[in-house]
Image 1 (cartoon, rainbow, N blue to C red):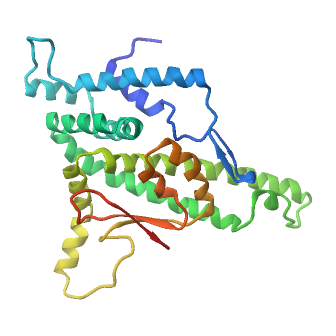
Image 2 (image 1 turned 90 degrees about the horizontal axis):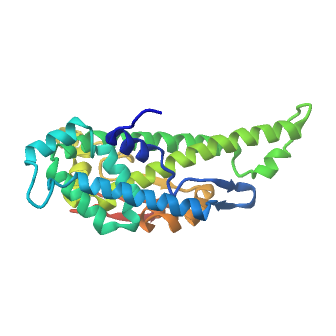
Image 3 (image 1 turned 180 degrees about the vertical axis):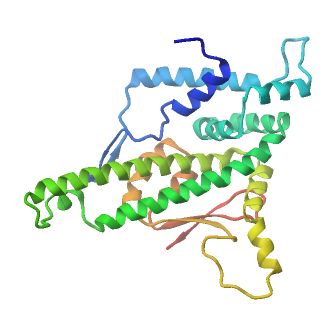
Length: 289
């Protein structure tokens, strides 16, 4: 292939690198969730990941050498023209590197926002779309779970439905259902880790600005209304994500070992996670459904 530019490589790496929370093998019939990794390959991935992170850290510095510096304006122009350290990249960096390098990632992201103030506005525009996609994935998962109710896959595969070969019909249905469910779960895990990374590793003022901006319109409408309306369960007091499925409980076993415990709690069955806009920092509160 042809030569790859640095911006293209970095963006491609964040998009396609194997994430530690990705599901490689899931056995729902036994109620277990496992991640299969090759130790040698993992060591190589870790070495590459470290070098890529060091490149991102270097990009945020205006220092060329002991005696040479870029001007702040020139630095901004280069990063923006080359589409480096974008809002989506910062979300990926926080999710990928934050759990194992909390202080360094927090410091890095603060430096980015200092060097590129416009990235905060871009982030505020981007995250609502991310949250909407996450909610859409959760709604899809709820539909998939309704299709089977409390039936296990082994029960489903043996279910009689009047077809010529009920066993084959059940197995075919369960295979498609499992593939769709795992695809949706993978999407939800990725979304939860990304959202959680922003809440945990971005500067408090940025998190507060995001939360307040998200609900500002609803709060203004409520304040100007002369008619008291019934509270809306979806907003504006908090962002609520109920997690009541036993199936989702399987995720916590592996997820809690790989990612921040605060993010892992998103997938504890029977709980909800609320991100309250009134606090100076994002806080997690768990309430039984």
